[in-house]
Length: 231
Ligand code: BG6
Ligand code: MG
Image (cartoon, rainbow, N blue to C red; front, side):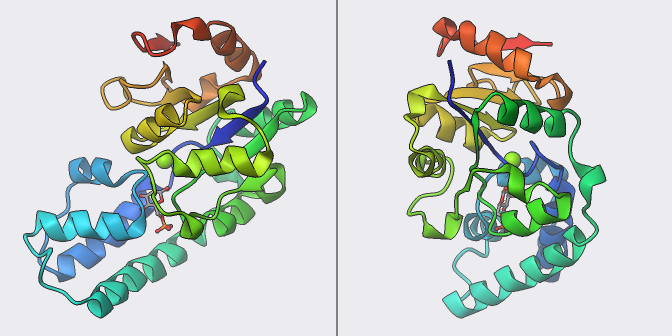
């Protein structure tokens, strides 16, 4: 039986992709870079600094700015992002998540958060979910963000659970790589093509029930074969 479920935040617990996109788009526009929603897919799960590096590289500007200027750009994006997430409230919890968190708690399964976002505690408070988590990884303490496994491994260490008894849930390509490399069971939420490396893929969080997790866990002998799309 699994002992813990480690959640990504953005795109799994609440949908902030559009807020990140709008904030990056505003900055990119000032720099003369046109950011598309397709490109935004490559920023999901990726931390702030690496996201900015990818955006500057898109515009051919990766070597044009000093460290100090980069820090100012990051702050500018984050200041706008924070004003956008001020409107987030419990109604913005994705379908099924509240119920799942309650069911995990009543079945004594530990709950962890492995987000790349330094705004995760604030967002969880706005959603009214902060106290549902037994541990929250602080991404600023990590050497390597996603796709490296460290975020998920750290969540397991903080909970005192071996990763082989853990399930990780992600919506981003980089996050699935991180979960797989940490030897946890990976569940992707969303697009089959983007998440093709996940052990299991669900269309939406509404399918993410405690019973579904049990079913997937009992079927885990299929791990690292062909991803199973369950719906
Ligand atoms: C991830 C998002 O959860 O957090 C990324 O998917 C974002 O888009 C990253 O860049 C870092 O977020 P923040 O809030 O620390 O800038
Ligand atoms: Mg995500």
